[in-house]
Amino acid sequence: MKKKLFILAGITLLVAGCGEVPKLKTGEDAIITFKNNVKVSNDSLYQEMKETYALGSLIDLMDKTLLEKQFKDKLESTKEEAKEESDRIKKMFGYEGKNYNQDFFLQYLRQSYGVNTVEALEKTLYLNLLRELQTKSYIESKLTDKEIKAYYETEIVGDVRVSHILVKPESTDSMTTQEKKEADEKALKDAEELIEQLKKAKDLKEEFAELAKEKSDDPGSKDLGGDLDFFNKGIMEEPFEKAAFALKDGGLTEKPVKTDQGYHIILRTESKEKASLDDSKEKIIEALVEEKKEKNSVLSIEAIIDLRKKNDMKITDSELSEQYSQYMNYLINSANERDRK
Image (tube, rainbow, N blue to C red; front, side):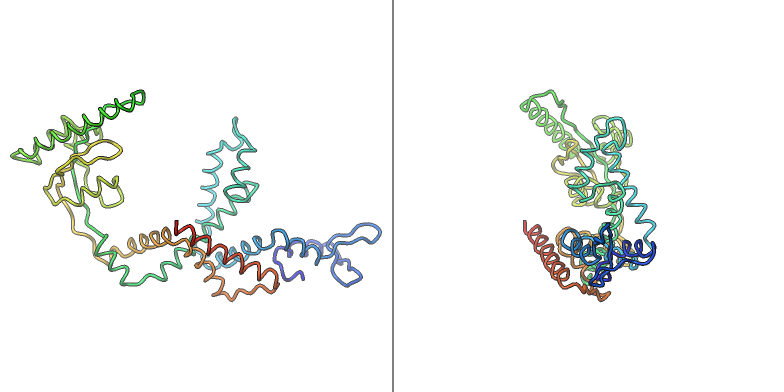
């Protein structure tokens, strides 16, 4: 029986190292002995462990073994990343500091990661990161050239350069809801008036820069005439980004663009040609993998199942094998349910 469950190996070796392993009358190895010839068998321990946490331990152990083989060139960097995340979590709870609440911290570990110690947390984070590598590798292997080309044609764009004037509502936390609303309306009106003024400009770029220096509430760009330099998608707030890329070079927004900062008047000044498909391919693959991973939770489960199958995984214990099948089906059904919501 001891060959069936990997987690018993350490116990078996420990007992074997102390001399000849005692036997029960049935011939089974005795893992623990007491006086009066009372003994606990290896098989009974195995059965008890199987009925409690054997499946989870088995899955973690076999995944760790396979994943470390699959990503052997990334193990050190993954361990470092796991430690950094563990340190971040500890810092968040003031671990072992003056105001450290151990009960609260351990409760968080149990609820969020299913562990009871910092050491176990780091191991869990490490394994999760390895599984994440497998998920990305699996999704990438399923991508087609057609998908990559389609993404390039619709999503990849060249950098744009814009200048902006920010008009912030003059509101404070102590204001009433009505007062904040009035401040917002005033900021919008001021921004609209600036746009009307700019529409009449003889030299739009020059007058825009002058107005930005005089009127903009963005301290980082006002002295530069509102210039924000070149940027691409994924940098600015979505409304700002959408407006900037919708403009043509020399174009001015017809209406103020609202973001969390306030109201923006945007002038697009320059743009660059987008990179070639070959130069963009790595970026596209990364984006598609993230997109598919977010939309389809089942892929992460399929990825690890695929790795196990490729390594001819077999669970020789029939009860554990059945538990495994039921558990994986449960995970898949749960993921599908989440994606439907």
